[in-house]
Length: 518
Ligand SMILES: Cc1cc2nc3c(=O)[nH]c(=O)nc-3n(C[C@H](O)[C@H](O)[C@H](O)COP(=O)(O)OP(=O)(O)OC[C@H]3O[C@@H](n4cnc5c(N)ncnc54)[C@H](O)[C@@H]3O)c2cc1C
Image (cartoon, rainbow, N blue to C red; front, top):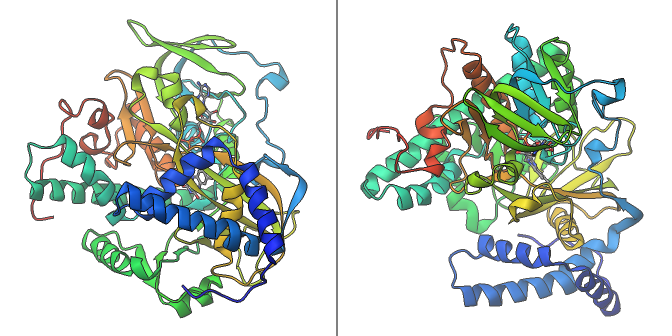
């Protein structure tokens, strides 16, 4: 990568920045450093990784970040509020602000009011049922990961990535199969995932258009810069996608990258052609707004589910405001799932990711297109009533189950993410005003779970691995039609692939048949 001319601070300035960064380091930075080293130097021994990491961090501390920060100011009171939630939440404190009451009995309880829970409520309201649904959230809608993310409506993880993350799990759990059959199976998993995700993305677009949702939706793709050493993997990944019908993932030449994204790169970039951007919290609020027009859907914010008891028939959902009996439960709790259901703690684990927003940023970075480098994401969004700004972020570090939802961003990671932007754009003044973190939920094989959790009537949609926009809407449609026993000629989430038993009891899971010609 070409190192572009920029301001060089003096030795004293660099040492000052480095000391400030060192003083601000927390335990999470050490964990994040470990996951970064694993990601970047996977192929090396632990000792070599350590040396490479020490060299890298000294360069970051004393050179890259001090130079990057010459055009960055941190506001006096950087807010922990995600930029998306820095506006009025139309569903805050519902129904309590109007004197509402918790029901004692409903047909179905949805736990969680993020992308997934709001999507369940939306589909429920559209399916013409007279059965009742209660959506509960311990906060206000979209205050989990759904209101803290980057705002990219992804086409899902690209197929080769899905194949390569599923494969090690198959190697560990399907020793009964030959290597070739495990390879076929991994390809099948990737193919089925991509089909469901592509349909999900189209359903999101159709819904935004039909319902005229005011959520800044724009479908201009997602450019992902790739370096020299990544070119072979990029090309074979695109080829693999094509071979399984996942043709969204392609490449752009450096000229095209410059034209479309204003980014200066020396090598071809990956491009997800049909990805979109939106205001993620507004998407949730719009879905709920439509759903609540139905008399059969209720929203109960600031209501924490403390326990779920199985009854002979149905369930008792125990909350800090009282209990609700119901026939079905849908867990839309993503990274919080294990905190609520400790016996499923091996199912989904929280992974911390963070973002920051600053006013200013590169003049040649267009709005409404998703952008990222190898180690960070960035972009502009057309915020109404807000000065032009830049959103940046990075990190993917596992945290403990009880830390799901923690908002503890690292200043080092914000600085590092900003430095990454200057690899591709001319350095420009930025004033950082917001900095926050959140926790997407990850499964062991980085493949989502959509299906029955307990073999009875408790369901889950989760483990979307930082790509919640690719699964939540279609996944919710799938589960709601099953709960309501509505005839559905599509099965985008076949049990053989998506049922949680794949992870909870792989020995008893009904795995897909191997299709050898795939
Ligand atoms: C910095 C960052 C960037 C990201 N960027 C993107 C991106 O660009 N595109 C993308 O697709 N994804 C992105 N993600 C991931 C995405 O945000 C998640 O995949 C998605 O929000 C998951 O939606 P959800 O509704 O399932 O979970 P959440 O939004 O986490 O919702 C779960 C809800 O359940 C509630 N809850 C949990 N336990 C209980 C309980 N016991 N009682 C009551 N309520 C409970 C929580 O309060 C929460 O509101 C990003 C995440 C982060 C943090």
